[in-house]
Length: 402
Image (cartoon, rainbow, N blue to C red; front, side):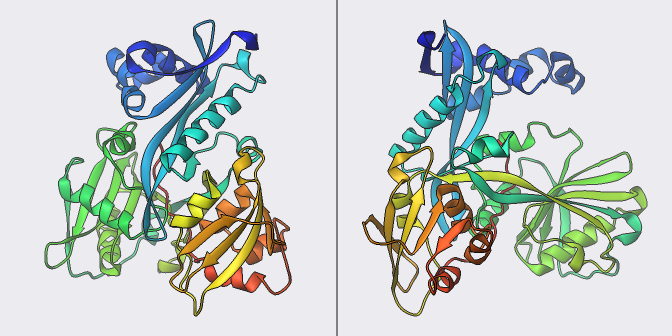
């Protein structure tokens, strides 16, 4: 059957129906479920049209029938205060009768090659199977935490200098506030129009946005939430200052008489229990986003290590099971201000690791010391401390799902 397989770029004019049908089959979303959710027939058909219009979507076709698809949406991410071009992988799906034929690997390879040409040196995705992606060089780079707080455990007697106002979802200050937050938060995505469309795609009509303003009426934080069945569901809460954090929690506590519980998402990788007066709450953590470096040299050349006392050099041997241009030993010259210059070399390596481990380490998800301890990083004696010192200790905040 592979003789009849060919790869094409998907377009809205030719492939919208097949694209939607494959997504709904793969993720088992039925027409009835969507109609029950309040969608109209034409809304269902058009729901993923913006992705086809703005993303780079490739598909494997068998005798003109779409068998597998893979989309890359170009975005920008703050990676340690550098706004970098990345690719957000979405709409990955294959019909079961075509599994085991390597179609997804073909599409992934083609898409990563294109990302490399366009200077998108990091790819991220929400994985439906962590082992599947790990075998192809991906690794976990960000977590999603959830929490549950009883009404009796909500903070009391909180003071803040500002005030909170509910605003429309399209409020300009609300959207600008997110980009201000993203510009100073490692891992955060700069949301464009499609990212905002996806942010609201499955939100219920009664979802609210509340913005915290300081005593000069400057927006400093927001909360996106829904109250349903006596529960306040917090979709996202961000703040630029501690005062904004207090003001938002004061606003949440003001709903105490209306709710029995608060349930929320937290993408900061920092548990909230310690900051509450009653810390006996339920918090859970799970892997959320995986990533992989597309091109090691280009990624390192725009990466920023921590500021150090004097310039240093390291050699790292990388293994990549999927992209051969990363299967090399690299010399990394690091200046005192953290800028790096990477090049191929044939020196004896100071470190050896896989591309996924390198991605996770450089994104701040796991430290070099920990990775060496679990034998994911091989290191020469005396060099580990250098690596541990020059990589910043901050986990990525990634709250988007496209």
